[in-house]
Image (cartoon, rainbow, N blue to C red; front, side):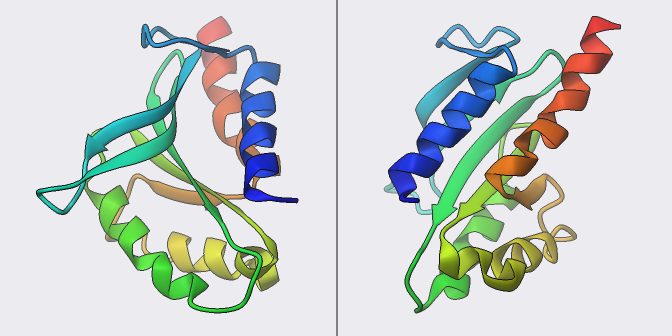
Length: 140
């Protein structure tokens, strides 16, 4: 799997749940590459996706790394970013052998939820379980 494959799998999952790509920010839509202010004043960051469920808005960031190196160290910025997110939730979808090895990245990120309460780190296969309850409550 590559980063591009992971992004495509995420898109397919959203569409499978009934979401459509649209910039109108209405429920059951998602947007790609949404700019937002960085923690650095002269910079803008991009959310890979912003998902509008019937009850909340979720910023989705994708982290992918296959090779060994400074994978965990690079995630520190993610915690800081999640702590200041303007959205209801900050979802990090992790992929790649290095980040998923022994669930290192997911455990690392989720261990900082006290500093960044909106932060949840998962794999692509867990997206349905994370977003699905929003859809059930709306239909009821």
